[in-house]
Image (cartoon, rainbow, N blue to C red; front, side):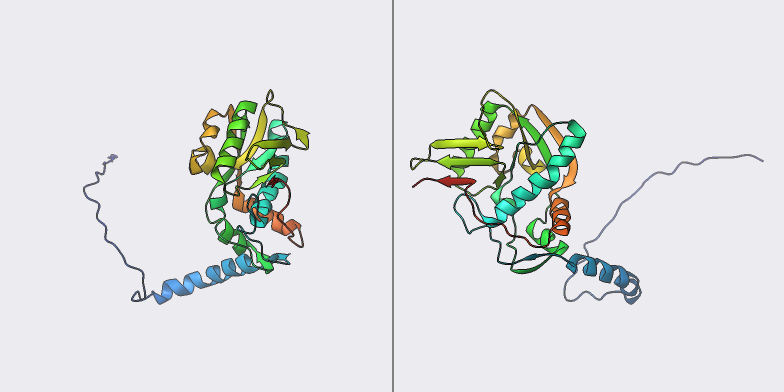
Length: 237
């Protein structure tokens, strides 16, 4: 009696494109097997978590919008305690990108599906340590972009010539000599939307928390969403 271990060698890999359109005929046995799981997922996605008393839009303001404010406020509220527990440090403010909001939230019931519609991407929340100098570069980017990139935890006021009239972070005057912890998305830290100031980050902490998951968790905590365009970022005319 003896043992022999033979080795296998891959000789060929082949594949073909399968078109899934109106001509595709599903396999009944597979469809029946999947159906209960599909119905369960659909019911979870459509379960009401919160309520929106009015339409929450990404275009209802020039410098900040109700949808952007909601997104940034959610990240500030949800990410701050996680970052604190893991690092012992306080989160200072949030910066996201206007283009990352892919849908408005219509008046009515809000569900997990709403979060998937607003944030269909798999972006994670990361916390970046920036010097005061890098924060100033970030402000210059915000002013130059002329887009309502969502922010929370800061108040930025411009004069009529687009110069910074005042800046507060966490309710305190900006201090160029200290470092700040900014929550944002991994997409932006990697250079998305040309936010190149993030390349000078002193430290990047991935808190393993998807932005969409933060939204769903927030929706489960509140009864009614009530974000508005406010005075966190505006221009004095």
